[in-house]
Length: 205
Image 1: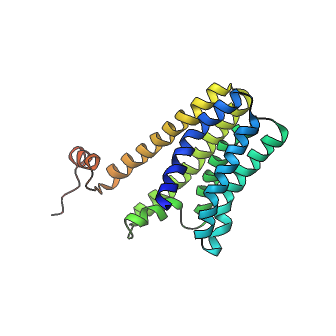
Image 2 (image 1 turned 45 degrees about the vertical axis):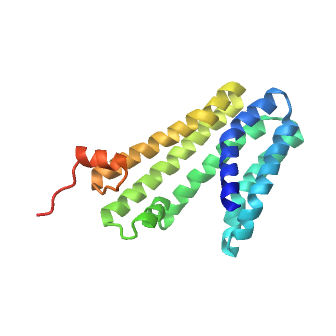
Image 3 (image 1 turned 135 degrees about the vertical axis):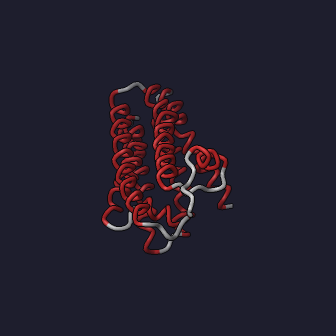
């Protein structure tokens, strides 16, 4: 059940810009807001129930942002507030990356899930790229916010529904290539096999 819910949730996230486009182009701010509010509530309940007590505040952060902008748009009958929501969510992620620099960087936490023992250079790499991701996401959020305010609904939809995902994927690919070429720590997937041929690891004599 949890897997099915996760799949449905992921599909809705991908479809949400197009749902907003369809409803707002029909001038149905109420339908758009109700749809988003219903999805947030359905998605949040199982997350909240499974979260540990100390994790519940963090688990409620993104749903609270979504409910705030959806409710405000519905109350004011202004679809722009709904368009602001993806930018606000993206900015929240960016700030989370930057705040983690006070302690263990987020990317280092992710890296240790795969490789528990990181070298000092690898830790430095994780810290640097956590900073890059933080500022990058905030920049994308600022651009999305500008489009929500001044661009047409069509332009906003294409950016949020396609372009922003491509831009995130581009930075992910750049970081992956930089990390593999820098540390020559290859896995067993086909891409790593190709990179290992192009940039072979140093032989230990």
